Image: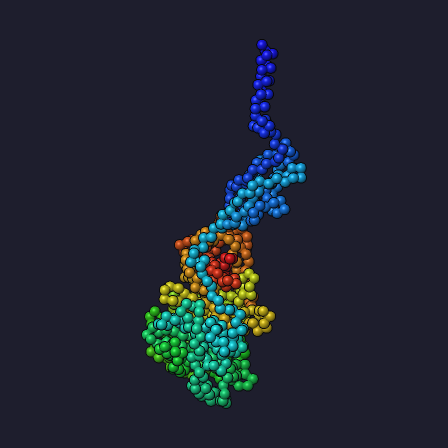
Length: 631
């Protein structure tokens, strides 16, 4: 029975095979001979990386190499970018250094017996970089006017000037909503020569300026008359054709429909041949009720240079300058109590404060002859600041006085104007002083170096930078926003131009006030960037940092500093320090230094986008720091 059974089973099997036909192989095991690779699966996708895994089945063949090939074009292969994996059936790799927000094509591959087998491709898109910049700031378009304005410097191109050919500006906000700017006659290539004096322009936004023309056709007749009357009393011959210099006006809106401009006219002739000293300078007054017309009525003499050395001008050397007060660079202020004051002076001994009659704009007290003893010329004003007590020939000029939150702030230009020019500030609770620096130096009583530094020659990375930044106007918009305007000069030999240092561009910058009440001038020029609050997410990144410490004639250069997202400083001068952010007050504290932030235009970038800048004080105010975030 057992044998019969086996035979029956065999016959049955053969019968079934015969019934199935030659093409029916469902029940016959097939041994695969090809390699297979599964489609990669992606995980942990970030802005710049992701991880991929795949399975390789060799079906008995020897696997010699495997990995992933990838790229931004379809069907990448091993001739392009690839990563190798440890040989095995399960492979995994992390692709890194990728571009954010980009789609990549990935295939796994296996090399067996010199034959490459690829998987089907997977597509993986890296996440887009997170940009916390507000939409209105991203949409900002920077100013388009040129800094290197040689091609439009001439008089026939004046409609295109904008802020070209600006030197020693003064700025006032008029009742018609325009800011009016007036200036010294100096210009690149002497473009102003023969076209009047104290040229003006106006703007609604402090960025785009319309040139208006001169406000004075010729020197008023009274200047030559007074000059030669004084010369007659001094016993020297008259000057038939005085050489005039037209310098440094200051303009103010009195708020009653009247606008006043005090101006300087300097006599460039010497007192006598061979004398060390040029003739005196005069300050005069003009008024208008319509600044848009550029028509100003001259009101005559206000004050002139005065000497406490009698008529002994022949022996005066530089350190014992003949004139005690040089009648140039006036600044004009109305105090909260309604008093009107003129503060003026340049290089000689310091700055004098002279009280004025509000109704006339002229001195309250009658002026004596402008020479005699110190008591004789006391009516010419009292000294409010001096840089040096030991010498009357000192590098300080261009005073500007404003009132803010209980203090009078006296801004001063230091050093020669071509390159070293820098700005200092001191303050007092009284218009006549004593004016004291941030470090406690009393420049009224004792004189001395004033701190803090407001501006200084500088340059950010990969740029020519600016020098000669001083002789400022300081003003506000009536809404709590304050501004600093000055000239800025290019360094020497920019674009191989031997005269590039004579290029004078008007600069306007924002001011922020510290919690202690000191002004900070922002490093980048004002460009009307939307002042949306800065968030902490915008702080991490690379910053260009400048130590603005005083160095005569030196452009302080920026260096890179990296603020990491974990609140550490990982690179730069303050490496190893930490940072924090006070969003309510928009203050970044880095390495213990409070830096006041502002959104401004990145002028060094070709497209002039918005960026974030900072300014702050260190070392008790002896140091000033500037910086901006790199774009």
